[in-house]
Amino acid sequence: MLRFVTVRGLQNQTSRWFSTYLQENRWFIIKRKQKEQSKYASEAEVVWMYIDAHVHFWKLDRGDYGWLTPDKSVLYQDYLPEQLMASFNKYQVDQVIAVQAASTVEETRFLLTLAAQYPLIAGVVGWLDIADRDFLDVYEKLRSNPRFIGIRLGGAEIRCALEEKHGRRLSHIRQMAADEFNVDLLVRPADLPYVVQLLETVPLLRGVVNHLGSPLSAAETSAGQWAEGMKKVSAYPHVMCKLSGMITPAGGFHPERLRGYVKQLLEWFGTKRLMYGSDWPVALQAGSYEDVTRLFNEVLGSGLTDEQLDVLRCGNAERFYLRR
Image (tube, rainbow, N blue to C red; front, side):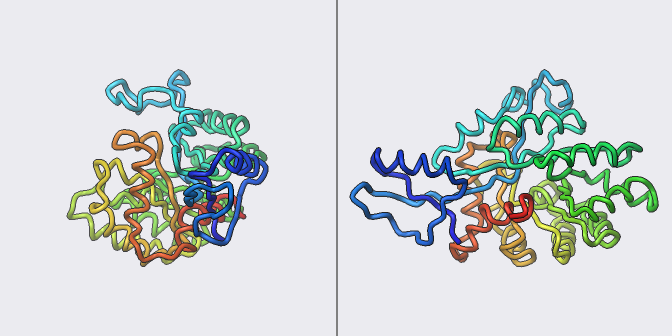
């Protein structure tokens, strides 16, 4: 089933009808892409639906964003859902996944509070200290909230878990795998051998690699390390990869810097295990929300079917995070 709406260019009567329909039905699903020809339509065009699987929200006065400093002028301000919704412009972003930007449980609770206020936020990928003796208590309490759908681990946390072997960290990761709880993986090419080792140890872990595994973050000499690592990671069917965080390391709208990596990821993961993510507002350092979405579509190339594009834009995130 293809998810798109024909709203652009409609006259007021039809536009109001579509608006009401979309408010009452989260997905307006139609099976054809041709322009609508009706007595109310005027040069209607298709607007594809998206689930943005990677956004951040923050309020500076909360005090737990140590990495946000005044020299980061674009980012050193509050970013909340109202600003994101104003950025969508012509893209029909149905829902978003809010991802942690601070390594505190308090920020996870803050994001869950936002999710209760804004239906746009379908779920929260928070942060928990997997080394904490009270991890399981906090984890279970947060899981009582249906919007708490995952946590994010960094490369250093993965390495520490593997070094302990039989320690708390690895035990807690095993528990999340047993619960089929999602784990975002924020890693660089040098971390990928440890991700592979973690998956060998916990093969049923439901993971999603953030930002393509950051191929542009490393020196050119590490390109082989990225390719070797991501190909091995893709062998685990419960693991996906986000086509997110691309515009910032690329230095703007430069699809030529990314196409090769995306082509390889499509070969390894296929179209059913990749998903769209903007990395808003971090991405604003290099372009607008529209630039980010154009870049995503541009790097995919022209060889994909409408059905494949649909799952990349929203279906895979829906299936992975929302279990629909």
